[in-house]
Image (cartoon, rainbow, N blue to C red; front, side, top):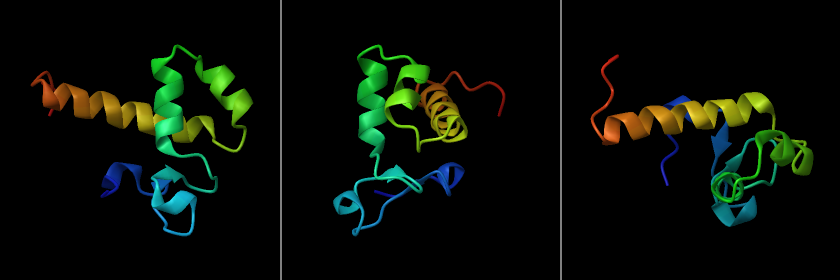
Amino acid sequence: MTIPKELDGVIASDPEIMSGAPSFVGTRVPLWVFLDHLESGVSLSDFHESFPRVTSEQTAAVLSWLAKASRQLINLDTAS
């Protein structure tokens, strides 16, 4: 996986950490864990309570990138 430049310093893929799964920098928490929590309705505060090494700035950056990517995917990005 190629990490988007907007998430540089937030998400990294290192074969020595979680077998290379894209993970939050400075943690062993894969991105898919965060996404699964969101999908199942877990609040951000509950996610951070369960994974305190993941910062709110990191999750905010991922959510911002996801929102932008989603808008572009369905051609709603009018603020380009």
